[in-house]
Structure formats: C-alpha cells, structure tokens
Image (cartoon, rainbow, N blue to C red):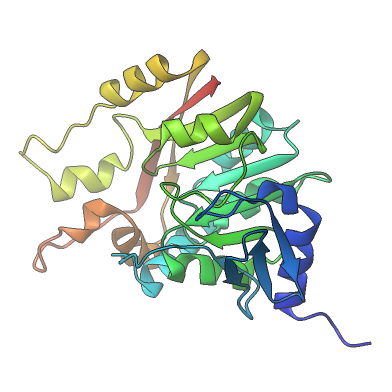
Length: 277
C-alpha cells in the first residue's frame, strides 16, 4: 500500500479530533466526508485541500501577508532565535491535550512547541491562506485551518490552551473556545524587542521606544489568575537573516529603500501573559 496523501493524513487528523470543530455558518457539529470535506449536520461543506488543510472562511478575506513573508518568517524561526520563548511556552502548556494557535502564520511556532510532546494535538488557524498552505506543507502532524475567529470554525469549550503569539487577539472568542480552567498564553513585545532594528529604523523618533502597558492591563482585566513572565536575551544574527527579519516584522515594512540596515545581533524581549478563563 502506498503512502497516504497529505489530504488523507489531514482528513484523518480532523476526523480523530472532529469534536473540536463546529460549522462557522450555523455552529452545528461536523463530520469528515470521504476524506475530502468537512460537512456539518445542516450540510454546509468545506473542502480539505490536497495539501491537507481545510479552508473554513465564510467570506472573502484579503491578506496583506505574502508567500515570501511566510518563507522569511519560517527561516527566522528555524534559525532558533525564538527557541527560549517556545521552550517556556511548552513548559507552560505541558499538560494541555488540545492546543489552538491563533494567527499561527506558517505554523512554525506551534509545530516546534508541539514537536517534543508525546500527547495532544495542535490546531493552527490564520486568515492568510498562504500561511496555512505553508504550515500544511511543512508540518502535517498538526491540524491547519484557514479561518476567521470572528466566524469561528470551532466548538465551544474545546481547547485546553490557546496560544496568541505576537498576533492580534479576540478575547471573547478565546473565552468561548477554552475549556473550564483552560488558559491563554499571549506573547507580546517588551520594550527591548528587536531593539537593534528599532534603533536603526526609528532613530530620533517617538517610535524608537515601545511600551506594552495598555495590552497587559487589558489582559489582566479580561482573565483571572494572570501571570506575567518576561523572557529576554540577545543572540548573534547571521547576515543572511537580516532581509528575512525585515520582511517578517511590521517594522521592516516601512523601511525607506535607501535605509541600510546592518545587524550582527538581535534582542528578543517579550512578556508571556498567562491567564485562565
């Protein structure tokens, strides 16, 4: 017997964890039909792509994120500069069996966090199809979904843990999706995040400094048993990764063409916000 196709692998994973899903149109339960579609009891249908992901968007969604941006993001993450952050997240969610990464992009953070675990399933969702396409191509061990949390394709109280890594949040939907005593891990920049890049791009402007105080305050108002943990370190950065870093971070998108950026090290400085519903 030949190797299973990526569509078959993705469909099998979705079928194994089908109770995580709910129709984004009518919120009814779903089932996998002939390894090719997710179908709800009201007969709304969503195709499982040949790459193994499912597109559950109910509306057209233009994304500003390109294929090359996600390739750059993967290259930067694969270089290991976020290893310490990912390792700490892995420790924080060590007991979680169902993990949702919201705004997962090309899936590298979720895949690396779940990689050393002998239990549980990771589910990644992003509105950008190019990101999910890359995630499914590189990481078929997890479930990948194009979708919008404003029209959520997941069932209530389905996840032990939700990750929200350097990405916009939807707290009300997170609360709906988390199980009782489930927890959210949100990663937000601290003042020193990518400071070497910020110093060159925003020198002598009010954007050279950054504060996450408002984000932290809103998180603390939204969840209980909140813990804020800072992770900060500086690592060497190889010259060939500089263009990739510029492409993956919003800071780099506004760089004037004539602005030369030279980096030989980079600082990762983030707060891990952990809270329960």
